[in-house]
Amino acid sequence: MKVLMIFDQIQSGQGGKENPNLPLGGKTMAIGSASMLGPILKKLGGVVVACLYCGDGYFKNNKEEVKFKITAMVKKINPDVVICGPAFNYAGYAEMCAVLAHEINEKTDIPAIAGMSKENERTILDHKDLIDIVVMPKKGGIGLTESLENICTLAKKIVDGEDTSEYAKQICY
Amino acid sequence: MFKLLEKLLMPAAEKLGKNKILIAIRDGFLISTPLLIVGSIFLLLANFPISGWEEFWTKILGEGWDMWFVNVSRATFGIIALLSCLGTGYAYAREIKGDKIQSAAVALVSFIILMPTCISFEGVKGSGTISALAFEYVGSNGIFLALIVSVVSVKIFNWAYEKGWTIKMPNGVPPAVADSFAALIPSSIVIGFFFLIRIGFEFTTFETAHKFIYTVLQMPLQGIGNTLGAQMVYSTFGSLFWFFGINGPAVTNTIFGPIMKVLTIENLEAFQAGLPLPNIFTGPFSDFFTCYGGGGSTLSLVIVMMLFCKSKRITQLGKLSIVPGIFGINEPIIFGLPIVLNPVLIVPFIVVPSVNLILSTFATNLGIIPYTTGVALPWTTPIGFSGYLATGSLVAGLWQIGLLILGCFIYYPFIKMLDKKYLKDEEEATNSESEIEDISFEDLSAEDF
Image 1 (cartoon, chains in turn red, green):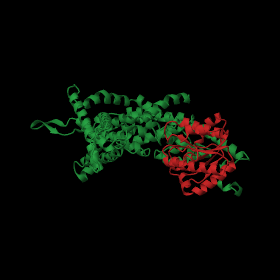
Image 2 (cartoon, helix red, strand yellow):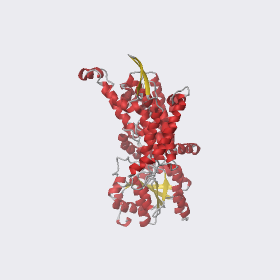
Image 3 (tube, chains in turn orange, red):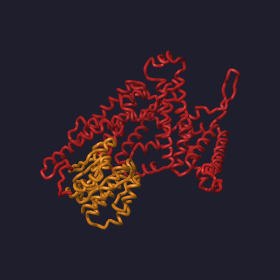
Image 4 (tube, chains in turn red, green):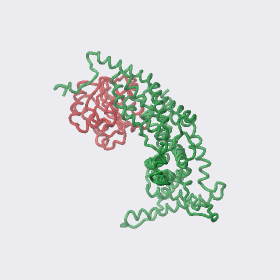
C-alpha cells in the first residue's frame, strides 16, 4: 500500500505558526509527522511514498491554486491512498485536510481520508458527509496512537476494496 | 516496552486530564498568572538586582519609595489565596456547567467565612482587636484551603440549583434580577454550611479550618513537593507523556501545580520581607533551570541540528526552530521532527531536563546559584535573562548557558543517529534516477491536470 500524506508547515517539519506562508512543496519520502505512522503502516504492509505540504496561510490565500496543483500532483505520484492529517486542533490545517481530501476524491480515482480533533467543529460539520474524517485527539491530547492505528487501518481497508461503512461509523465523525 | 508503558500511563493521564476538579484547579490558577507577572515587575523595580539601586532611588525619590511598589505586589501575590478561590470557583462552575460568576462569588464568601476577621494586636495603650483580614490567611498559607472551599462551595451551590431549590420570578422580570433571586437559596445553603464548619473548628485544637488544612494537608504536600525526588517524577513524566503525543506538563501540573504555586509564593513573600528564601523547587526554578526552549530542553537539540547535522531536513528544521526555541516554543520540533512516537529522541528528551534539574539542585545547595526569588516571569523569557531575573544573580544566567551547552552534548549522539538515517534517505533519493527527492510543483505539465 503506497501512502501519500498531506501536511501543513508544522507537521512537515518546515517551521511553526510563524511560517504560515510556506508555499506548496513535497518530498518523495516520509518526512515530519509521517514517521509517527511508519511502524503502524509497516505492519499493514504500507509505506509512505511521498509527503506534500503547504502552509495553512498559503492555503487560505490560494485555495483554488492549492486544490488544483495538489490534485494534479497526487495523480502524478499515483499512490494507493492519501492521508490528510493528523490535523489535531490546528483550525487552518484541519480545513485544508478536509477540502483537499474532498477534492482528491472528487477529481481522481485515488481515495483520500482526513484526521482531526473534535475542536474543528465547523470543518467537521461541513465535510463529514462528504469524506471520512477520523477522530483524533487535539494537540497534546490523549489517544494519539490509537487514532493513528485507526486512520491507517481505514486506509488499508479502502485500498483493499473492503466495505468500510461499518468501520468508518466507529472511528469517524 | 512502549506498549506496556502506554497501557500503564494512558489510564492515569486520562483520569487526570478529565477530572473536572483538577481541571478547575489548574485553570483557576491561570487567572492569577498575568497578575503575578505584573506584580512581580513592580517588586523587581523595588528590588532590582543591581547594587546601589535602592540608595540611588532613595536619593531621588526619598525614603519609603519602595512601598509604592510593594503595595502593588501585595495586591497581587499577597492575596493569591483569594484569587485562587475565585478562579477555581469560576473554572469549576464552567466545568460542571453552572452559574460561573455567582459560583465564584459564593466560593469567595465561603472562604472568608472560615477566616478570622477579628485580629488582636498589642498597641501602646494595651491590647485590642481590629476588624480585618490578615494577609497571613489570604496569601500562600491559604491556597489549599481556598481550593478545597472553592470546589466544595460550588458543588453544593450547583447541587441546590439543580435540585430546583430556587426562587422563580414571573415572566417579564429582567434576567439579571431573576438570576440573583434564583441564587438566593443555593447561596444560603452554602453559607449555612460553612457557618457550621467554622463553628465546628472552633471546638477543635486547630481553632480554624486554615490551621487544620495547613497542618494536615498543605505542609506535608509542600514538604514532599519540595524534594528532588518529587521534582524528578514531575520532570520525567512531563517528558515521557510527550512520547505518546500527550502534553505532559498539562497532566502533571494538575497534581504539582498547586504545590509549586505555594512554594513559589513563599519565596516571594520571604524575598519581599527580606528573609532567607525557603524553597529551591519553585515554578521559576522549574521553568528556567530545567528546560530551555520548551519541554525536553530542546533548545540544545535545535542548536545541534543547526550546527552539526548534515541532512537537509534536520538542518532546515533547526534553522527554522531556533528563534521560537529561544522564546521557549518547540511545537515545530515536537510534531515536525518529530519527538512524538520517536523512540530515539525520547531518551535525551527525558534525560536532559533531568540532568539539568539534578545539577541545578546541587548548584543551588552549594550556593553556586542563589535560590529563585519567586518573581514570576513569562515562561517565554529567553535563557540568560530568565536566570538573572529569577535569582538576581548573573552567575545563574551563565549557569543556564552552561547547561544549554551540556544539553547539546547529550542530544548530539541521538540526533546524529537520526541525521545519518535521513542523510542516507536523501542520498538514495537523489541517486535514484526514477525519483527525485524534492517534489516541485513547477514541474507539473498540462497532462497532469
